[in-house]
Image (tube, rainbow, N blue to C red; front, side):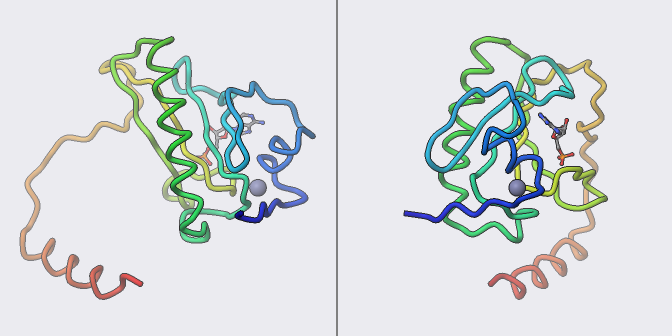
Length: 143
Ligand code: AMP
Ligand code: ZN
């Protein structure tokens, strides 16, 4: 089975090890889910793999399946209990994305049309030439 790989100083690794308390929602061999203590809205939860990697780029493929299964479980439970207007799944990588904890995590965020969270953007038509050009560059960079 996949080796757990935790970090001595990481706050989320400490939560996994039980060295820091959390409002635990669910745990299995590979993943851990708990309440975010600075919720964007009531019911805001986090899901983490039991593998310390800073961000999406550093997380090995085999961790995403188990993590997303737990995300689905938690999102369904949050939806049942909180009955929000919607739920966003969010994951931050780097300063421009406002990442603050450097252990890959998925946010499960109950949302409301008028919650003013600022993650809703107006659709504006793109420049097809620029989109196509970028698509070619991204395709060439896929490993
Ligand atoms: P991000 O900014 O995407 O890296 O998200 C990190 C999230 O972790 C923030 O929403 C914090 O509120 C949350 N957080 C930080 N420390 C804790 C903790 N000890 N228990 C629960 N949530 C935490
Ligand atoms: Zn960690």
